[in-house]
Image (tube, rainbow, N blue to C red; front, top):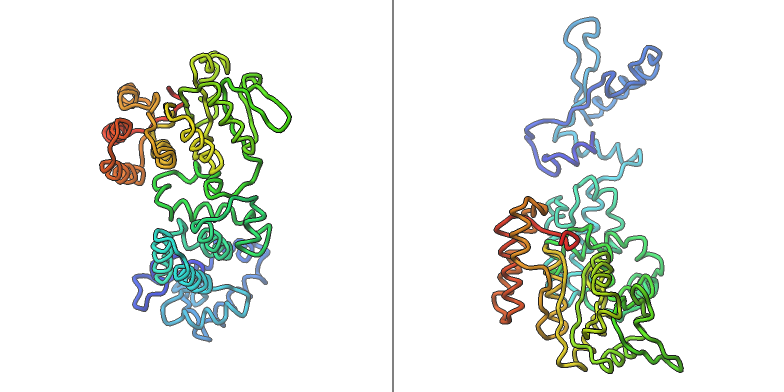
Length: 422
């Protein structure tokens, strides 16, 4: 009954309530007690209900007529019973929702006072304010889920605040030890950390949570060796060895520690165009249709797979290439959705130069929408696109104009497209 109360609109509200919490004493609720051979269990159940009523912890409603007249029919919990009901439940091992609410609220307030990142402070303020009203919506949770998972939120919020403030890129267990004092804890609460950051960091607004599984890589958390996955023609000198990028077929998977050699090789090869591609299969398909690494190299192009939002190491490598090869044209092929546009904007912002949109155009969105293609954008995605369009309105550049046109096409058609559908 207290669990039902904690999920109800009456939780933490003084009386009178619009409706008491009702527990029926019948076969459907207690099948064992009301089975043909359940007389003893039924007797104990009814006795317990009457005992709780006698202690002022519930109110019992009795059958008014028939052979069961006078026997308990249902148990009701009203505002006058809540405090004493909790006392009895705690003695039996029940944990009140208020414990988690108070704990996480206090922790969020404490972290907000220490955080140097404005958007994280704002988010933590929303979390603590919501929890003070028993509303965990800012965490993307119902009360029921919050109650079962709140212990994960304490380290998850701590880790998210640390990552938001900036950490030196390192392996997950190393960062976990630094931030949480436990090398394995970040791995155990990884999903909760991703959930916090995806809701707190404005960069991920409107990006569905299922598309943010590798989001921690952007903050420098490494779970697997970093790679530059690319295709093109270049000679790489690493230590005493020499390698040809075109020999890696269908595409090269180079350690990100080879970034300097990769940049040197592309500059020496006279690369003129860099095409970054968001998703794996479009990347592989594009390399194949371009005639493989040799075909790309023949026209002075290198294709690079970003795997969604690129890692700091990959962004640094691309920025290094942009710095060394001033005449190189950068372009990006991604999904026509919130995430795709944000990845393009992330790259453009970090590279500090125009990044053309490739294939993901307003015309493509409008054509596919007219054919009935794509998936409907959600209200949250619409708000995110409108806000992103407003941000881009303050920026000049042909590539920015093209991106605003894609946003307008998505908002006008009400659909988003994945690049695999091109």
